[in-house]
Image (tube, rainbow, N blue to C red; front, side):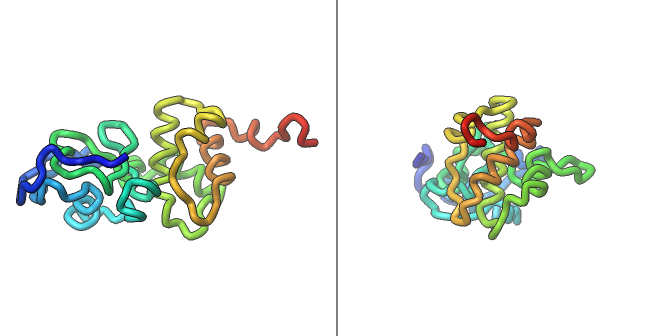
Length: 175
């Protein structure tokens, strides 16, 4: 999932884009990863650094509605686009997104480090499918969780889509 800039080497470029519905302008080297602009320039620290090679998913955000690993996307490629971070999921009145609330109720986090990326991936999955199947969850949730909370993650996704009752029922042959 490596992403390379169409603007290598350009320094001090002004980039205009939206973050969580707010228009912003930043000046950065064209190849600076979106992750570092979010964390350092815009002080949005909910998006985490994990591996730096787009493998773990801790840095996941939405770019124009698509799940994106921000550690591998040059800021120059974000010009004119819309970025949503974990900070942008809750509503203006402070109400948590349904996935965030389900995460709390399912007690998903242990260490919590990967959780913002996991939540962003889950939101993208639900927005894309409406009510994902187990197979779709397996395919979409590729973020790494070193604590191994994958069963709780699945439970939270199903709860956020109203499938929680079905998820808690024993499967055929499990009696």
